[in-house]
Length: 298
Image (tube, rainbow, N blue to C red; front, side, top):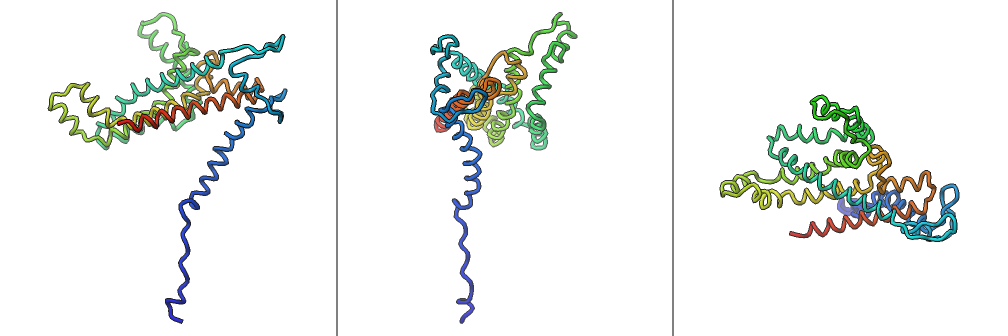
């Protein structure tokens, strides 16, 4: 037998689908699995002391827009959930807008530094990620408190006589959300602006273009993909934020995350909490759809 005939046949390489099976299984188990559990729990009956009873019931979904009278058991329309969801969406939108307003100039500043200095500015932006969100939020309490750094500085400068009440207010919650989300806006915008040829800005200035024209016709088209990506990265976590509103808001301004945690905690109404979670997921999917549509626009 010739050597060519005696050579063993080459092994078949695994296809792309076979190679991706472990990742697909992981996502299906730990990603889609909990969502399926929430969908099932939302149509079951709440158990008296937490958990669910395996009986089909629409009480969880009905409680989103109504409440049951404790005396006659009748249902009455209630806009409490709509107000909380509206407040959460508005807070997420304002957080995103503030992150764009602050993050765009900061990203442009970093992108215009020398390559040796850029890495240090990027490091400074990412330093907050070195500690947990809870630790950073507790640090903000020390800064915004009645005896915190802000009030101490204002009193020391003679600008105020009494401490300003900032903690446990909407201002504190918004400051915490912006602080926690700002790096997610700065980094994508910086990545987009770093690829921009600075000679284009110089050419626009040589052609007597004003700052607004340069921003609109040169910088914005280059930064737009990064701004859209950053807006999505900021909006989605801010929509379901739990730690920041709870710690800095003191539970006075309830958000969607606080409401869902309340149902699975002290209220022990798991079907209602599952229904609220699915509504939150629908809001996130709507944001993804809007983001996808904006990406396709020229």
